[in-house]
View 1 (cartoon, rainbow over the protein chains, first blue to last red):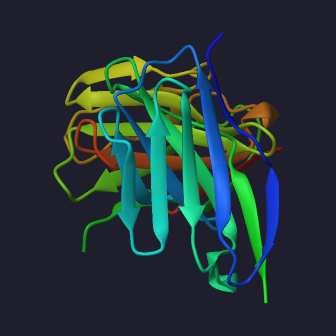
View 2: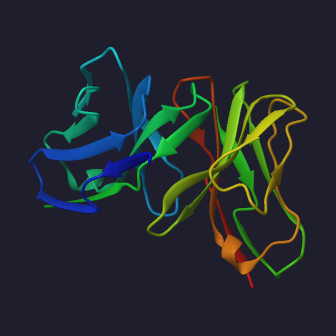
Length: 112
Length: 111
């Protein structure tokens, strides 16, 4: 069956450390993978998109990797801050881009 | 300002009373979709539309209808709501194969 899994429901780290979130998928062949941030009761907000032919993408303190052999994406937040506390969702395209399928998310808590 | 606007933000209704949640985007996006989000189940796609008059079912379409008569609007219709449709609903739009923009959400309670 098709699955997209974010390995941790919750991740607690200290301010200044690097947070690493994992997204694994099974029986999909996505052309790209996206990461979103969601705050409680609000809509997801796009962060980064990485295509199947890209190994790594960076934006400020964020870094995403995409390994199509392992069927895995890693999302890193360096020098984390309490303001980074939120739920992070990975999403991949399905059926030639007609559907965006989401993982259940990882809730990150950064303590000062 | 580029945005996706959903209305209403909050709605409490009774079982069986037809309702419509509106969604409008001002970015000229071809692709629009509806999701519901439930604790422990994540975001699940209900319906999507690739363009005007083109709609298709997502993972959980039962009990919902949609229409796409204009490019900017994609309303979600619950003909006969039931308590298991109590959820947080999001509308999203995008160009094909690019980032999605989400609305602010509609929290629906069916009693």
